Length: 133
Image (cartoon, rainbow, N blue to C red; front, side, top):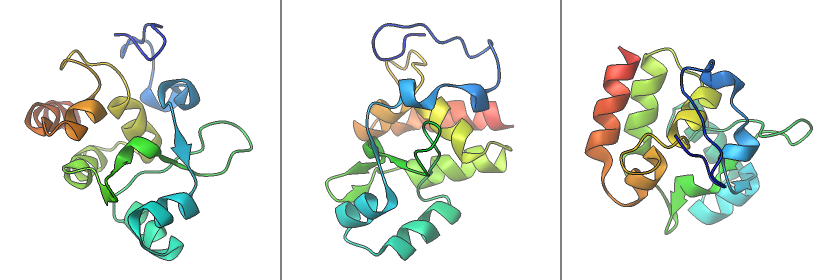
């Protein structure tokens, strides 16, 4: 599976938690930036992360928790993302692993986040359900 820039990622090489998120996710935004794009408070972004409507992780040492910019589209959370995050969390995955999975090319075609952004979320959810259970 190819990651941005053509580097290959093999889901069997190790836990998703060990994925290099900074290499997988092209653009990150801090909680204040996410709040601004969504038209809500930073406190509401924190709640959205806790309730699995969004996911956040530390992309690189010293960066602090951030949200992948691709999780927000046209001022809203990408359609289908909250439900998908709930499925993955119910299956035991944490935010870091969810983000790694969403940004890894799974031959859908493309990455799960791209399929969600293009309103092709059915296959993504099916794969998440089979992976999580």
